[in-house]
Length: 126
Ligand SMILES: Nc1ncnc2c1ncn2[C@@H]1O[C@H](COP(=O)(O)OP(=O)(O)OP(=O)(O)O)[C@@H](O)[C@H]1O
Image (cartoon, helix red, strand yellow):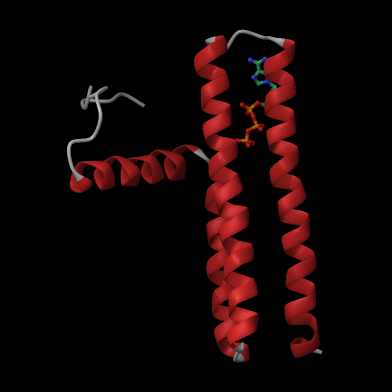
């Protein structure tokens, strides 16, 4: 992605910091298919939880689980980009290790999220 904003010094105020944080979301959403999938699933799960009438504790667990998976997917995205920046997309065994471990982290979080989802939703659905 090409950038017209070439700023490299610190943000001068909150508005500028917020603008760059939102730009981070935009680039992650445009470039990361998995992040889009996680967000679509999150919206569907939130709709189902609303329909099933989750209580306060169930909402807390659900929101924390979604935040963990989406947050770790964002972390994976930034790790991938850092590796690409350092390696300039050349093969390196350590780059492979870092990217594979980061992907494994998201996979682990997603599997735990599925287990939490089963615990939360199954008793209400059956
Ligand atoms: N510079 C590199 N050196 C060595 N192996 C690399 C390098 N870049 C990528 N790879 C290998 O290719 C795989 C795919 O790379 P990619 O950047 O698409 O990560 P990914 O985890 O598949 O991304 P996503 O989370 O978007 O699916 C990595 O998991 C890694 O095994």
